[in-house]
Image (cartoon, rainbow, N blue to C red):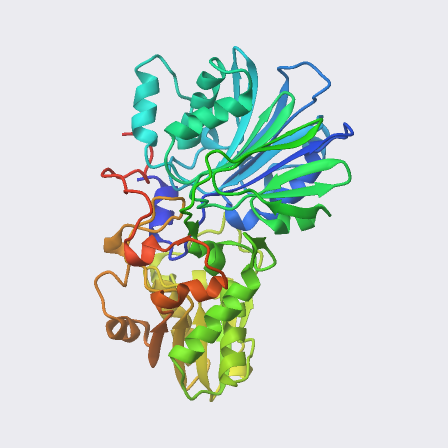
Length: 479
């Protein structure tokens, strides 16, 4: 097993598949620096690799310049490399692997040269029929350079482009074949195209800055480049940006939608707004629901940074228990952090988080976190609070228990590794060393959104919006 796979398996944190960003400057200005800042704002969505590909719409039709590699955005790109990326249209990507190995070959954007020209593609999500589509292509002579499902999408778009008049029609034809979660940004020599799967699992937004149009995973990336939010790409919609503006195709939109509820609980940045819902407000509401459902006599409410903070504030507001900051987070623990040996494994948590003893000593603490996966991190944090002098620790989780795997772009481990799969809430409470434990009621998830939009909660309920695959698709194609 590779060191990366082992690290992922032992990690007690959830990861998202990717973040995508694309821009077309209709005035002809270079866009690479804007993509860089957009990716920087989306770094939380993927820390394994990143890349930028640009093209000049007024230059040679097949010329695409790209820089991509393993590492964080500020590790991969230098002022010199950004300066060398000349072009007024481009796409960028940050990646965390849930399907396909973590290698340089699997970094995105993918750039394809084919008979009709070039395509650069960035993908967020997971296909559930990628294996069969890949085999279908291989039996007709396709040679794959990567082990990711995004290349399957790119191949199908390129093949369909041979049959139709334009690339947006090719994207639509490919969407009829691919199943699962995908938010795509595709750059052709003269167009920037955004597409979202009909269920809308993963977010995609449209922005505008002066005479530039932008597509991005989250609105926080628009803010980073001083762009205004125009609207969300609808589930099933294809938007095509050209010199003439935006054209929309909604023929694949459907009534049933299934946005990933965990975007609002954990993945998205709190300053983002997706499908008309403020991420910050949804987390505040989750905390209020927890206070209503699991009240407790306590002296202080604290959040585990960062995604637990807003829910903790909501719990405090609803309960009247004062909100406090009990943790100091080290923001500089990056992807390359050297894991300690088993004998001092607690160090990995202590280096990321430290407890303010003055805040919790002698107090009954309500600790809010977004989720419990395997339970190892939560147990260590509870122990840290008690070692710092907390007399009681009452754990409240702003999501229901994880019981089922995700096939749509969230790196939830197999059910045998989920602490809630084989243990009751009381048993988990004992394992954490907490005084009490309460999860968000799955029946009240919709209240977080403040709207009646469709959402996917299959990781909590097992009710998948699409029939899940029979084979494990969350590894890679390297068998």
